[in-house]
Each structure stands twice: as C-alpha cells, then as structure tokens.
Image (cartoon, rainbow, N blue to C red; front, side, top):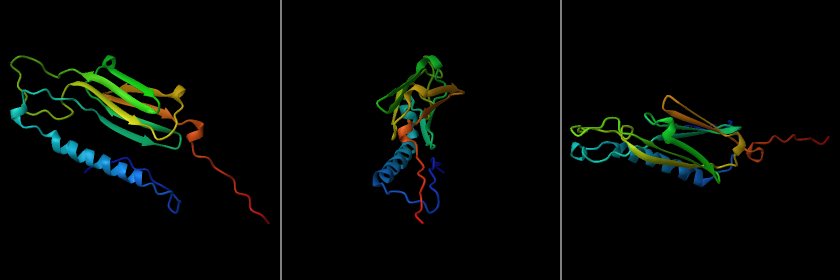
Length: 162
C-alpha cells in the first residue's frame, strides 16, 4: 500500500479549492504507479546499465518544508544540494555496489542501480535561504527549509462591535 504525506486541514476550515493541487497529487500518484511498474527488469537486460533514482519525500509544516532524499550507498562527497529561485536540486553519483568482469546482474531494483542522478522540487512558498540546513545520515538526506516570514500563516484578531 502506498503511503503519501498528508496535509490535514482543520475540520470545518474553509480552504480555497485549487484544481492544480489535485492535478499535482494525481500526477504524483501516477508517477509512483509507473515507477513501481517499471522497477522490474527482465534478466535479458542484466548487462545494461541500471540507473539509480533516489526517493524524494516532501512535508510541509506552518514553519517550514522538510525534504527527505533516500540515497543509500551515496558517499557524502558525491552528494550536492542547491537552492536556486525556489527550486531545491539534489544531485550526486552512486557507485556500483559490485563491479567486475564476471559479475552478472539477475535483478536490480531502482534503488539498487548506480550512476549520476538529479532530483528537483520547486517549493510552493518563499524560503528563508539563510537558515536552510541539510543533514545526511544513514543514507537519508534531510533538508529543512524554513519559510520566509511573508509565507508563514498569520493570525488576525477580530474585534466585535457592541
């Protein structure tokens, strides 16, 4: 069963309907479906190069965006993170897990391949670029992107006339 990050709204909260948000969610679900379908590769392709594609998960809180890139086997020196014009780009290279003249792959999943990779995510709100932090631990890159003050939710006090 596929689990996706869920943004829960308050019950009875009025939220502006955005058809593009629903279309984007549908596109992500279709991408995941196709990725799972094409993850299987027959043994006749065992001599081909298997491209590595890290998983990307994005969560939003009122204060920040948190991005996780799952890239097991990627060395810290081969991992690069860049934020430019509201787009987060993570690139790097994963070396082959096993090499040799007499090595034959029988099955290689999308997480087991090797090669150069790039993943991009365009953030839907302004970011305080001076406070972005990235930590790489146990094959998972965690990038915390604090929202700019202008992008944070604001509370407005309502005064009632008597």
